[in-house]
Image (cartoon, rainbow, N blue to C red; front, side, top):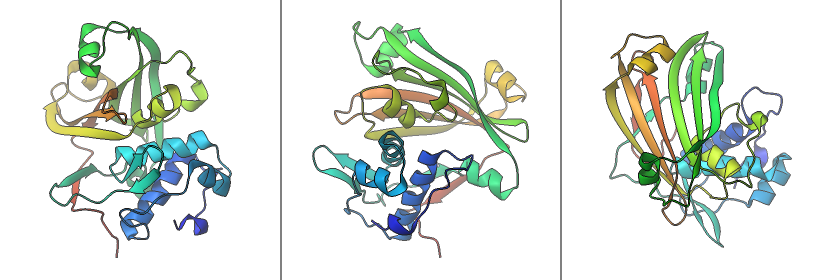
Length: 252
């Protein structure tokens, strides 16, 4: 892997795990890391950048969720082969988009709590009565004091993993699972559709009820294809656009 020439800015407001995620993602898109090539171990990466293994694990879980790498138990993590038979749609990266516009951005955690499992959650996660608790999170992304997206997230709850406020500044779903449960996110499925926002979503985003939005539901699975996380994100239709790539996109 060609990470030796890369650096991470630990003084940046951008989370360290996200910087590492972008470094590896860029190398995959450039072709420096090729399909089937293995990544260094968590220990090797953490030693190289002098960051915690939990931070490395969170970055890798994001890459797994994005379908760019896959993990094999006992063997390691490998660059995935791009699937050219499917069109990949992506919302433009929020941080990069607002950085290009010279705007200040902020992720706000509205709520984080342990909730009782109801029938709907048990059905979504396909679990029985033994799972009595879930972690529930609500976040908002904003730029220049304008709220642009709203997301709710659920994960299975593990009593041995405490919720630390310092880790919840930018709680992505794979990162939450890696940090607060004993499960390792291995794959994900995203379903995108155009929808009309609800009155609650409209009030949070400061837009009119029934305004057009992008609705993305994400399901995270572990190595046994067990559902370990689920989220629903609403993106303002007047502030986002979709871009399609075939395979790993390489910049000129």
